[in-house]
Structure formats: structure tokens, C-alpha cells
Amino acid sequence: MEFSTSTTTILHTLKTQALAVGVFKDGSLSHAADLLDQAAQGAIRAVAQTEFEAAPGNCLPLHAPAGITADRVILLGLGDPEKLSATTLAQAHQAFAAYCARAGVATATSTLCGLDCPGAAVADLARTAARLVSAAAYRYDRTFSQAKPAVKLRSFTLHLSRSQAAQAKPGLAQGAAIGAGVNLARLLGDLPPNVCTPTYLGQTARDLAKQYKTLKAEVLDQKKIEALNMGSFLSVAKGSVQPPAFIVLRHTPGQTAARKAAPIVLVGKGITFDAGGISLKPGPAMDEMKFDMCGAASVLGAMRAVAELDLPREVIAIVPSCENLPSGAALKPGDIITSMSGQTIEVLNTDAEGRLILCDALTYAERFKPAAVIDVATLTGACVIALGHVNSGLFTQDEALAADLLAASRQAQDPAWRMPLEDAYQDQLKSNFADMANIGGRPAGSTTAACFLSRFTGKYRWAHLDIAGTAWLEGKQKGATGRPVPLLVQYLLGQSQA
Ligand code: BES
Ligand code: MN
Ligand code: ZN
Image 1 (cartoon, rainbow, N blue to C red):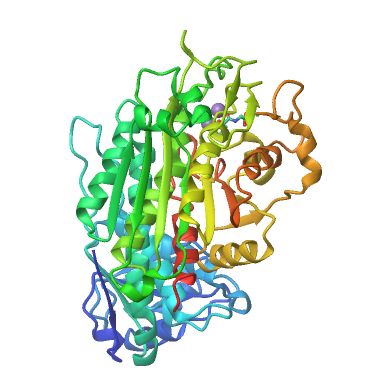
Image 2 (image 1 turned 90 degrees about the vertical axis):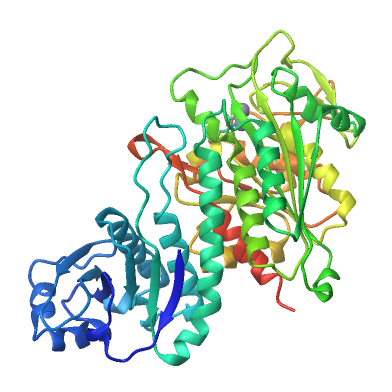
């Protein structure tokens, strides 16, 4: 898709198939809507004040309005004019993009990023708009016998003043790259687990490295993983006939000056199917455990955006990937395993497997002397109970890192909420037979999972994102969301300013 800005002042002569303008719930019009209304001799205001309910997320198309060149003017609800926010505009752009996809629109223009929005720069509004429009063009079609018609939208333009346009341009490019990263993460999540195996994720990393010359991929096989003594990761993998893969994808910036800072490492949980192992999960909705690799998908999606933008900062993605299945060769409750760090773990529940594969990846990350390590995982059902499907859970004891990630989350319209991670919770992991148990009981389940991971992160700054509630949608809309790619890339953009 093409993303551009237009600064023509004569809005009513703009040629586009769909032109988005804002309307507030008191019936007042945005500046752009008002200009069009004058050209259309009051036709827009009349509709805005009668049949349109201008709540955020609502839209109403007006076809071929007299006096206006655009094929359609799309009214978008902005709610209360006193409460206009970047979130409202994101809701409006999501509705606009969904309309364009549905209606077969090929060229779309939005005036919404020109609105004065407290707390958000034009570049932020443009970035989010471009990301949402890219994501609206996603259609899963890999495993149908008949091809699905592709979304027709091929050009998205922001109508702005000259000075706003200059600020919006980098935001648009970033949003397009983030959108493509989101869509890669969604595709990997949506693919069935008999296609999206650890080997497939490894191949995806290799394909990215072929596509972008700043990326280098390395996929370690069973033998190399054994040589590294990743006893914890391998204990999960051994119940499956699918071979495990340990994926390292590294972005080295084109600009040599940008290579000096210590790298930022992203770690993604890559369980391509989680049946629970011997501690077998119940049957209903077990298919959704194909999404248990969404942490991996999000870090690969983020790397695609990082490479597309040639971010001036070294970034390394690490993905431990395997299946968690019951079999005669599978890990058992009671087994004690030795992690790459040397610490021993008593496995009390084989369904708490995410932490078992992540802990060895976190130990492996030490070799890069990272400036920070962020892991992303569909780690606990408890996090879904705590935060629902709105916020990803953020766990860290590093105040500055928490502040940076929460700021990125807000700026990217990709919500996250800080969760507790005090040492007082560590007691729940006590084992009579090993250095630690792999579960801490029902109380504060997402925090004790994070406590477990924290024991492998002593050598660097670290944060953990639990995306169990945000990585995919359930029910009729079942499908991966691509979260938290926008948050991750926003954080990395912030860490790349010279
Ligand atoms: N992948 C699951 C977590 C999960 C469950 C994500 C439901 C999204 C929806 C993870 O491997 C798991 O099974 N966790 C267990 C841990 C428990 C045994 C301590 C859980 O949350 O039930
Ligand atoms: Mn599990
Ligand atoms: Zn899992």
C-alpha cells in the first residue's frame, strides 16, 4: 500500500474514493468537515445533526455529495469535543479502514490527523493511522480451497497543512512498517499448528534475513541446543516428534555509527501448540493453543519493522520454539531438570512449559551483553483473569524500563498495565527437591510466572510482557491481533534516537 500526504487547500476538489472527516457528538463539525459542508451547501451538517450518532467508532458514508469531487465523504464519530484524544482518533481510523476494506475502496484520504489533539504529536497520529489501515488490509486466506478476494485499498493519504505534513511523513513510514510487522505476526498466529511448526518459524526468520540485508538468521537444531546444555527447553521439546528450533535473528544497522550502543534483545515464546503435556489441558478451546507462539510471532513481526526502517540500533530476537505434547517420551510431573544456567527445576505441572523454554533463552541472551532484554509470552491464564483482553501485563523491577515501555505503549495505542513483581512472591516457588518449582500455586499466578523468569535475568535489565489475553481474539472474530508489535517497535524507536 502507498502512504502519502496531501496539502492542497481546496478540500472539495480532492479526488479520492473515500474522504474521512470528523463529527462531534454535539453535532459540531471538524474544520475539514465544515469546509466540505460549505461546498456541499449544508448537506453534511444536516446529516451530522440528524441521523448520525457521533460516538467514537461510528461511521456514516455519504455517496456523491453535490459540490464535492470525492466519491464519498465518510463521517466519523469523535464523541465529546472536550475529550478528543489519540485513542478516539485511533478508533475513528479503525472504523474508516474497516469501512474502506468492506466497501472495496481503492484510494482513501483522511483529514483526521489534522485535528488538534492534546498529548499527541502529528507523527504519533499518522503512525497509528497508517498502522491501523495496513492492518485492516489483512485477510487470512492460506488454508481455504478457494482464494479469498484481496482487500482493494492501495493508497492512503493524509490531508494536512504543509507544516503538519512534514511532521507526519516519518510517522506514516513507521506506521506502514509496523502494520506489515503486525500482519506478519497475525499470519504466523493464525496458521494452523500442523503448518506453523518450530521448523516453519525458523524458515520465516531465514526468509526475513533473505529479504532484508541488515538481518542475519541463525537456527540452532536439537544437537546445537544440546551442546548449549539447554536442559529445561529440551525437556519440553522431547514429548513431540516435531524437532525444536532455537532461532536467533539479528539486526545490525546499516549506519556504522549506530552500531556502538549495546543491543536490545527481544525474546518470544514459540510454543507452536500447547496441549499441556502430561498435565493435559481440557478439550474445549484447546485449538486456541496454536496461538501459544504469538510471543515469537510478535518479536519476528517487530524485527520485520526494525529491518524495514533500518532502525539505527542493534536489535536481536531470540525464539525458543517447540511443541508441548503428551507422549511416552514426555516430561512428567515430578521430573527434575537442569537449566542452561545450572539451576535445577522441579516440574510440578508440565503445562507451565512457557517459563521452561524461556529461562534457557534468557540465559542465552547474556552473551550479547544487552542494554535491555524484553520477553514476550502467552504465559499465564492468570494474566487473562487479571487484565482481560485489554491490557498486556508488564512485569519488571526496573523503574526506568517500566516507564519507557508504558510510555511506548501509550504512544503506540497498544495498552499495557504494570503488574507487581516483588521478591515477597518468590517464596511460592520453593521446592523440597530442587532450586525451584515451576509453579507457585493459584494466587498471583502471572506474578509467580514472572518471578520464575526473573531468576534467569540477573545479568541485565529485563522486563516481561504477558500477552495471554491480548495476542488473539476468541469467538466469531477468532484470530491473532499482532499485539504487542506496535508497543515493541515504538519502544525500539525511542531507544534509537542518537
Ligand atoms: N499457554 C498457557 C497460558 C495460557 C492459557 C494462555 C490460556 C492463554 C490462555 C501456559 O503454557 C499455561 O498453560 N499456563 C498455565 C500455568 C499453570 C499450570 C501454572 C496456566 O495459566 O493455566
Ligand atoms: Mn501450558
Ligand atoms: Zn503455553
